[in-house]
Length: 297
Image (cartoon, rainbow, N blue to C red):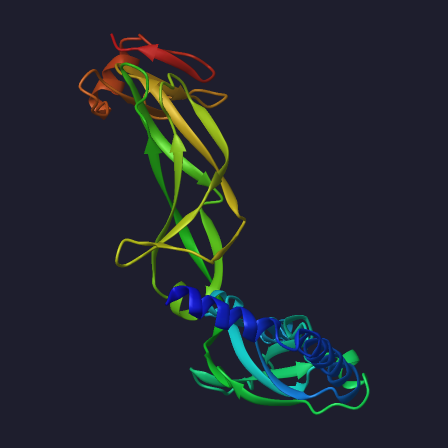
């Protein structure tokens, strides 16, 4: 039975073989002629990245695009009906844009059109039938906010421990206040601005230049996308050994214990009392014309 089937199939294939080969070749020739001369109408789908235009116009009006990152990653799927020769490689022959020339009085969200256009060479390429039949995004929501500027004090946070028996008498940022600029909703949510400086192992007064700034909201989270001026601060930290006192004396000393500035901590890491300084100076333990350090007697 199988042998008869094979023989019948072979007879079918080989019967009029020359005419069958000729038919295949003729069909291929006709197809080439149709493609090159008739240029049939067909459909093509492309995925096109969306480009944001006129974003500088927003910045010029002291406004900022809040969802710029989402829009920058947006693609639009477009189905085009046109001549086969015209819509080949369609991805590189179409552009999609969102115009950000948004009126200043617009309220969020603003509905912005996604415009899909053909490149110049596609329009000028001769006789064609080109129509966009479907577009996945015809418009998108755009969120725009006013840019505001405020001043905020800088809070300092040390990182690490000072050297043994060393205490930070003071830490100051220069400048102590910075300007913060950004979207109104983010700027108004700032609880404080801080700078972290490294003090690990320090045994004397030191400075940290170019310390970065971070803004924190009322929920305790860092706020990104803000601008600081200046972008960094310098930190000066006054360090003393426990049980010592630093004296800042005037050029001409009057009554001991009254005409000088003092600072220091005792062995319990507590400030010295005024009585200690009066006693120390009355007994003559410390008496100098210029700044110096005196041991606790």
